[in-house]
Length: 210
Image (tube, rainbow, N blue to C red; front, side):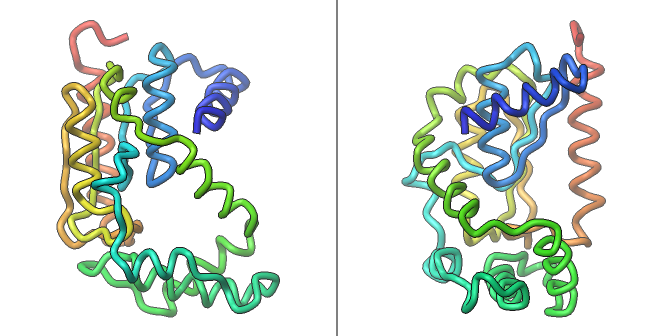
């Protein structure tokens, strides 16, 4: 995760972006946390969504979520098999309060798989999370205004993980969304976008904001 946080800063350098509002979800939230802690002068605000502090005691998925996460497609080399596998997975970890039909999932996931799918990359992601370990001590050093968004019904990264993340970042605000699981249902996009925009606006309006 440290490497990927460094990659983000490298991209910002290339694009000429000195400071930015950083938003990350799931593993992206973990990367965003590391970025905010280790590159504080590059971060205007942090939004960590459906993520964790690395504290394993509060980050355990439900048995169905763990099972589907570790399962493999029947044929990893066949895009249709991969799509079907991911449809099943998001049927388990998705938002019970905002369910998607199988047709909607197939359409959305199909676009993602056709854009890019790397089975080895999935394994490397899991290993990166494990290798990063417990970040609670690191989180206490974050100075950027922080918003933690978490679904109340997330079976993959439970709400306790979101609460734990917010508790260890000084001054962090926690927003819990009922019915939300470990996905971004279309019906919630306006609320999520507004929450992030409001958070960024508060940072811009704060005294001494650069």
